[in-house]
Length: 583
Image (cartoon, rainbow, N blue to C red; front, side, top):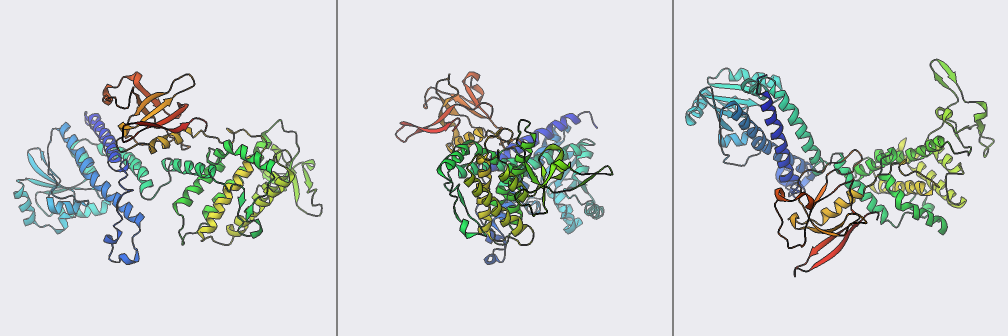
């Protein structure tokens, strides 16, 4: 590598960062793809048949925009900056037309730009198939028109066989050379530089496509999961049908579960804090949220088989019940003897045969005539457990110290769980497909009811152990975003940081950087404000803001209270309650 390879790499890294930020501000921040008109009828000869979906149009629109911006504001800009280090004269040719496709552009503009390399005037083309329709006369005309010595064609095609064919064709013409982008970079700038470009560009495009997933094909990423989690919480907290279970198989169960008032009040009191567990860090919550994401992405599609999604909902219930079982096993202070259906009589390990102790196996005392046996619940017997949903349901029901409700309510929960199991596992897992969106919607609703009934019926539980995550900052971020107008420098709030701090008037500082989330969907991007005395204060530029005037809020520093200050048309002000910690 040349000595100035570090300078080249710094240029590459900087250009990638600038382009990604530019693309985010220009398209994602302004919600360009959300507001893009649906012109699918102009992209097909048979528009009456809806050949092209809106999603396909959005995705192709995104690709066209990205391709154009990559050419103009990334590749050409990068070559220009690299040429400055190499001291190669670079002359950009302003586009006479705003084309997305390279071939369309070069049909109107001849070249992307001009270079002066080793005293040769060179015109650069990206349309590698140009040579297939060219002849020596047309090449001479281009050279004379632009007063050039050579034409370089840079191919971005990754098919090396195809590029090899083009090179053979180019070899029959004078004053024309064809380079792959890799060869061009490594030949005229620095050997090995292309591999660095490839690394940084792929990282940049991965980030852009990750953000674009929500705008076009709604890819599964943490950024997209956060609003799904918030929506689940909002729906459950305002849902008046928590105690309503809709059986697909048994119409007599399609009614409110008749808990007595005392038990119902217990469940409602526990719901406030335990509802967050279904969107938390534990595996059962991850399965549930993943199901929610897929369900909302593919809802009401009559040709889609919802079986996989409904089974994923069921899996979340299985995982929760299994976690409860393991939690009981690990509870060393628990002296209550419990039993579960035996799944295996023996196991083989390292060529030896093992079975549980005789005292750890019994017949079901409630069904003496059954051949099915039970095994005592302890750590040494885990490998002998039947961990199917049915066995887990009966364990949950039979274990006296688990459910803190009356026997009547325990019976009702058990009946709901068995119906839920029979509907999905026996009804759709083994033989039938579920194409009915309304049935899938019922399964989804029932899953929420079942998960919350299980969680809220437990007597004691460690919320952290069950995956509790504090989503206060995500909710705060969403609330503040909802109050931001098009000119965010004019959004005012009153912030109370803690019990010992007075409420302070602050102005939101606009930040166009992308939203970043951790592995559990918690937002990492901070919110910044500047302290002001009045909504009519003149704000300093971002570079001149004193540090002691800046207020930063993030997931680790959440204010006690935040109110929105609305400026009315008559310039009067009114305060709107926005956020209160713990609510």
